[in-house]
Amino acid sequence: MASEFTKLFDDWSKTYDDTVAGTDPEYREVFAHYEDILQSVADKAEGLILEFGVGTGNLSERILRQGKELIGYEPSGEMRKISVQKLPGLTVFEGDFIDFPVTERSPDTIVSTYAFHHLTDEDKRTAISRYHELLSAQGKIVFADTVFADEEAKEKMIRDASDKNYTRLAQDLKTEYYTTIPVLTGFFEEIGFDVEFTRKNGFVWLIEAVKKS
Ligand SMILES: C[S@@+](CC[C@H](N)C(=O)[O-])C[C@H]1O[C@@H](n2cnc3c(N)ncnc32)[C@H](O)[C@@H]1O
Image (tube, rainbow, N blue to C red; front, top):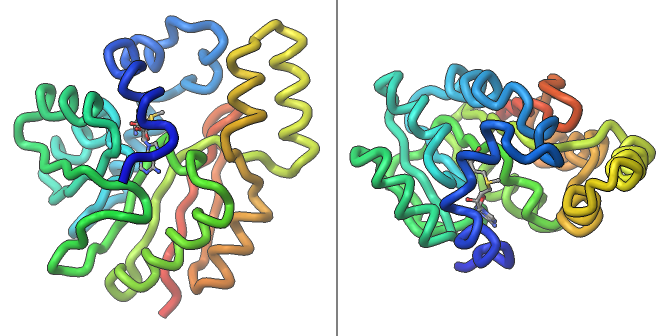
């Protein structure tokens, strides 16, 4: 169940909350409006909610604060440890976007922030298909993540990062599995969702996909 990124996130876990607060200039724009982005995902979640890539529990905290019912999944043991230290009421299982212990009841909302790009496009498709089977009627997926309008926009972001000597960011953009809106739209529509994208900063979009009845 370990993701290829588990070691990276085990190592990053202790300083992750500093990064999202904007201490790393290379990632400042990626995490611009982080609090608002997480809040907008939490506000749209309802019913039984599954969260993937819980990390240090920042989205989970907002959802639990609203008194909503949440089950989390996270492949990194160090991240899971921090999330339950921060939120003793959180239920978080070892699991990833595709391989996770399912709930007895159908979930109504599946949420995730800053994590879906860790799946290849083929695995994204597999995950969306799995969620279509699991979700209740008219259930929905609410994600926030880095996505690009098209391949040209992605190439431009990589060039911009290199020009600023943001070598770690440029390397991430080249080697992780950041996708485009047309690719994701194709997957969601083909599998049976209506999907909408709303821009939240220079990198991140809110993705809301509702199961068609
Ligand atoms: C950038 S952090 C985001 C954490 C948190 N959701 C947030 O918004 O701050 C990405 C998280 O996704 C997790 N992750 C990586 N690959 C994953 C996968 N295949 N399935 C689920 N989670 C994964 C990482 O371990 C990490 O905790």
